[in-house]
Length: 210
Image 1: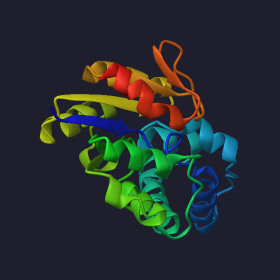
Image 2: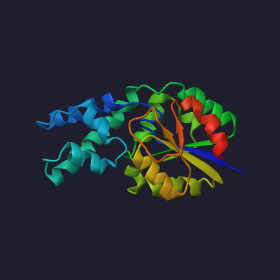
Image 3: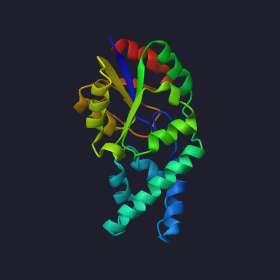
Image 4: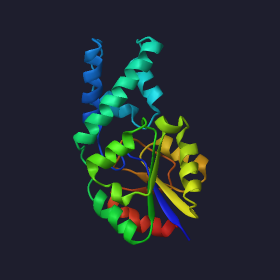
């Protein structure tokens, strides 16, 4: 029986908010925009599709220009993130190795732009632990569909999703998989049955679920 664990990325495996804020502000300054981004504003948007994030952060920018701005921010961010490693949450690499040793297959599904997961894997040097990944920016499909896609194309029999927001919970529920809420992350998921305060608790709770 093939078992998998599908991970959200930001707020679940690492905290890149400061790096993202810096990179997007650099692009905003290049275009001489008055917007002054804060880490709080960016953090509050984490987990949303990129189109929604930029609509929230740049509401007064013309929609056509916003698309250009978003593309520039995404490209700059991917390059910057790949070179400037954001902090992993405690025990992430240790736990991922433990899960692999227990014959779990590991995946990432995120609402980020295309190229973001490869940038994370390059920066974190954790690529050897993951079997597949998907991003909103590559498929233009919402997270529930991307979770289903990863589950199906990898021919999994059982899987859980670990995320840190209500959106993650809703998407996982729609995809028909059990959800584990990372309480240490950025958001909330009030209806989540399974919860962990540290990723170190994940192997035990996954053994119970699967």
